[in-house]
Length: 57
Image (cartoon, rainbow, N blue to C red; front, side, top):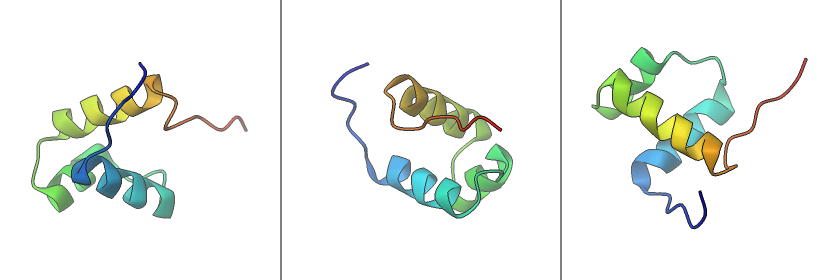
């Protein structure tokens, strides 16, 4: 997925996950006033775009 446009919600999700990558989607959803499904979709799109990457342990 190229040319993914990051909006304010995406930026907020990224900031929250950089603070604590283990934050539950339900908690993020409550923080941003959206559904957990919305958070899930946004995170998955950012993963596909290479904006969010996993870190092997």
